[in-house]
Length: 162
Ligand code: FES
Ligand code: FES
Image (cartoon, rainbow, N blue to C red; front, side, top):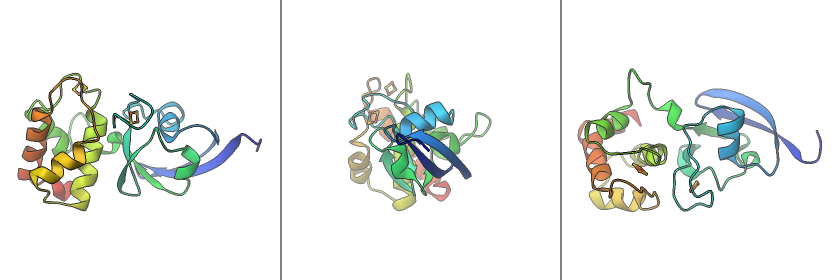
């Protein structure tokens, strides 16, 4: 192994993956470029927009701020783990039904943030939801429809699938 490459073993969406990656590369880059999981979006690339949010050992994390090598031994969940085109996850379905997103560039980050929130807190208050989503930016919707979507997901019992 050359000096600038590191061995990384992660479980991604339930599948163990071992890779030799340049030590300077971020988790977001490795997910997208090495593992083909392009559902994780890169916006600002410096921790501001939340588009790159994934679950790391169950907690929401900005994959643009994390080196892949820091994720060694961790369990990673990306937006690809949520649902399929044929069967959306209840959070995705609620967002779809409530027109939560427009261009949806921000959607993977919001979805994973909500997913992690509901796993930790199955009955968040509207204030807690706003607080949790305050670190995710959307350039299109003005946020009201996103919050409506989260409330719809809650009322349909989406927390049971988080
Ligand atoms: S791309 Fe990671 S926070 Fe914006
Ligand atoms: S729907 Fe376009 S950035 Fe959020």
